[in-house]
Amino acid sequence: MHSSRKGNFLTPLHTSILLLVLFLFGQQAFNLLIAHLNHEACDRITHALLVEREGERLLNAVIDNKEKGFLENSSQGRSNPIDYGDKKPSFHNSFNHLYNLVQDNPAQIKQLDKIRYIYNQWQKELKQKALSGSVSNSALAKSTSFDSLHNEIEKLIQHKEMLLRVRKNRVQYLNDINTAINIFSTLVILFGAVLNLHLLHRRVKLPLDKLTQVSKLWQAGQMEVQLCYTSKDEIGELAGVLNAIADETRHRQESIEVRNQQLEDMISALSHDLRIPLLATRNTLDCMIRGAFGPVNDTWKEVFEEYHEANEDLLKLVELLLDISRYEARSASLICDRLNWKKILIKVIGQVKATSTHELAFVCKISQLLPTVYGDELEIQRVLQNLLDNAVRVSKPKGEILLEITPYEEGQVKISVSDYGSGIAPQAQEKLFHRFIQGRGHRGRSGLGLYLCRQIIEAHGGNIGVESSLGEGSTFWFTLPSAINNVDCHYEQNITKCSKNNA
Image (cartoon, rainbow, N blue to C red; front, top):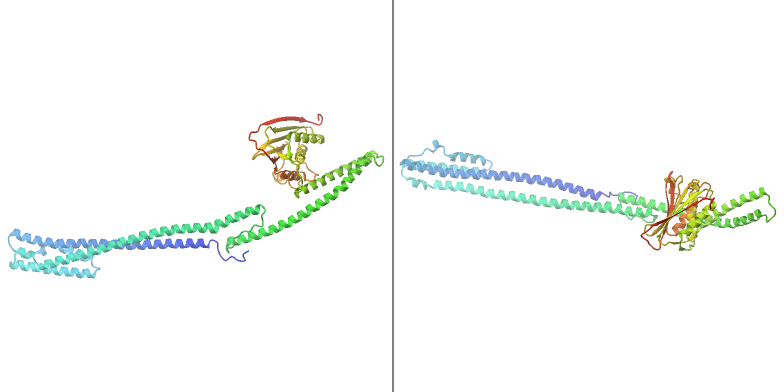
């Protein structure tokens, strides 16, 4: 038995669940972080797309302004300067919008400042050449400033395209990480569930199954079986307590068995010692009643008869105790022959009629196809007579008693004696077949008759019992194993009304 509990049998399970919960919280936190990073990356992609789009607009605006200037000059047929400021070309709108988009990026601000500088230089160059009229419109189109401006805007767009690809890759990378984490989390959760089930099975179910098995063995009387559970936890402590209780119960049972055996030995010895003087007393009283020692008047004869009857009761009790002792010691010898039920019933009913003072009707039902049963005919007859005596004792005058012999389950024969007396209470039925228990109408008797019946039937390999309801009568029955199993059974009813007058 454990002196102190050093652990909790559910600690591994609690630890596993706690780790699983912490892992789930960590997974959720990581998912939130991934979602936040993904949102930022999407915002940056959106920003890069806007910058790229505005850069393309800016480039288109530069090309558009250039083409519009030359087309106008060509259609007018002269080389007048073009007032771009009055026309407010879309370059400035796109540039300002793009400038606002990249305010947080100093490098791109610097690049835009360079683009604006080159654009202004290009505009000045165009104005100067257009005013001087020294260069044709085709020559203006081949300006180096325009090429530089075009290249810078192309660099800006390409840089954004490259940045856009990088950010898209980052988003894809975050999505891949999120997918991998979700798969890993699912596997961890499944593993945790399997681990928890395994822990529950090993820490709870197996000990409880073992406890149930050992408890059933204890219930069957095998108190020497121990619970082999050595873990220092609640179940281990419980196992220690139950083992201690089992040991104490076993010691008590052994002590009770020793005392019972001593008592049985004493009863057997006393019964054996009492039987000889009781037999001698019976013989002496018989001789005195017959006048072997001289004449006996009526008064003394009545006294001697009373003594003789009391001596007979004591002798029957002593013989009953001796028979019980032999059966309990398993030293009773049974002479097993094939039982003739009709012959047994005739003998039993005849003996009961000879001693009964009631007018009763005996109804006998014997199945035609009974399995063959072997047993000690005198002992079985003794059991039937005891049951029939009890039924006669509780039956009303001119009542009816039913004796029935039928096939029973698993190739057995069932013999039952039914009366219509007052019945037996349920709490009394369980103790009827124990020693020194007096049943209905048994006042003043030893309470050993049904106990001896049980010993005889169990010695034959059968069972005995009672079915009763208060006010509705009782049915005492016993079963005997058969040698041949018969499936079909038909009843033959032999009704014999018996009374002392027509016996």
